[in-house]
Image 1 (tube, rainbow over the protein chains, first blue to last red):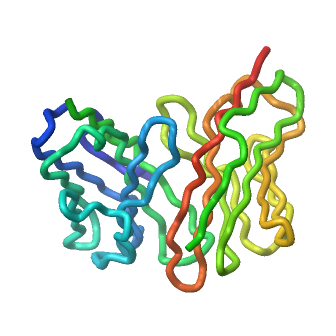
Image 2 (image 1 turned 90 degrees about the horizontal axis):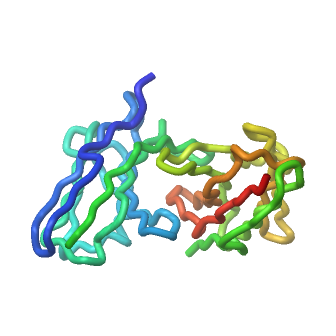
Length: 115
Length: 114
């Protein structure tokens, strides 16, 4: 079974530039999550999708971050414009269904450096 | 709102000695609870999860955790540490009541000395 795919793995940009990350979840997984993990901290949930609908985006800085999952499969997270404090690893995860006890499967992450 | 508190940012043990990583949760509802491990330069992997079937949960690589509702705790233990256990460990609560929004603790770095 293929795991959660993310690209790119690394990205270096200047502040005020834009960047986009892509995630392809495990086939058949209805729930998709984007997290931001700053060095030394636990992952912070940015947005959670159930199919192509948003379950929670309360911690997504909507003035600069956006995410979509148009066909209920893969997803894109965008930052525009980037700030220095956006330097972090962005993790994508998926789970089979919108239910308790469902394990999340994580991708390898995208390491973003904003200069 | 729920929160997850991992009481120690670092735990240092000698190989062959017991491991205890502490986690407390705060939730309006009874949450689902998980422990994930993150080895250096590797993705997060599930260790174990509490499903309400039993309060003592066994996971991979000899780890187990006990759910104690009265103490709102879900501490992770292992009888004997191995060098390969050195990693970052995260306690996660999945809020119930229909939203199933996950909250991570800040993580505990387990250091294993030979």
